[in-house]
Image (tube, rainbow, N blue to C red):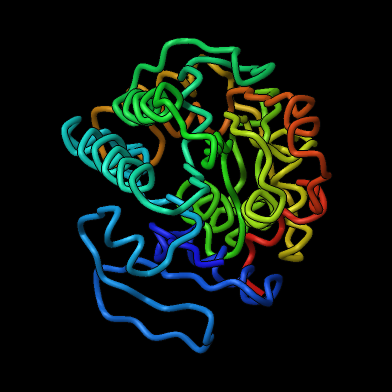
Length: 313
């Protein structure tokens, strides 16, 4: 099987390529890049493309597409809405249209759990939908709808995956910042917030990709998460143990913290803003019942067992 992989140089893409080399012995990946790259694996070929057509896919004899490329959520809110639309919707549409006209049979689109709505704290299944409010969530949802509403030939299938916060080696963003805080033994001041959050191991996600290509299940849209949700305080304790550090936490009243975060929205020198506070302290739990039923297999990793993989060895 020949697989086209977009977003190959991103966090998920890089980790998937490492997983692929170890866990797949027969398929070949054509990984899209903007600059010339080399790889040690004979089963990965780097290609440079900014546009996609059916003829291009067929020239590489592509059987399946894993579309990871997208504009990630900007916690500083400095990205223009048009950029999200161009990357998250228009690029997805272009690649999906090329897929429809090509001989490829499988299309996997990595959306986001934010597509179900930005303000939810619990998601029961893929049909449990609110209204997305941010440009990031809106454009991902638009891309989903385009794929879902397209009359799909019987020879083709698509899988829309909505992952929650993904973690793994070399993770960026708030999780990486949290590790730095713990390394310095900086006290975590938000212990007054009692939350529970779902996370997704990038290895579990890579496992899903390969299984979907292998099993060829009917098309679906699915929320994806590890089965065990944990609190931020418990996360800190796990990471501190891996770092051989003491987990230092204390409780500042919630009202004071929220006021500080609002100030951080206006002044960049304040290390906390409303978006970061939301990610660190809000609850967000994904029910995995539908996922387990539709996938038909268990995910190999639990959050409590391997979220410490975000710590450099």
